View (tube, rainbow, N blue to C red):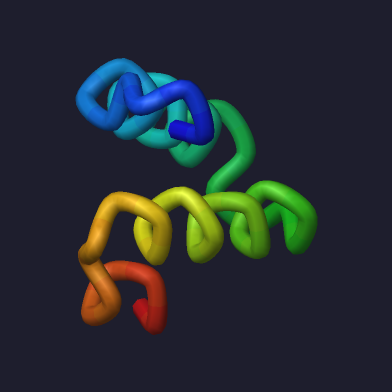
Length: 45
């Protein structure tokens, strides 16, 4: 995400969610990724 590879970052975020859907650190990082991607509603979810 920080390198401007938004789509790639979202793909990796979805993979992390599939592997560990209840892990707090993963959920926090997902929120950060979606926020950086300009998707605030998904970040809040």
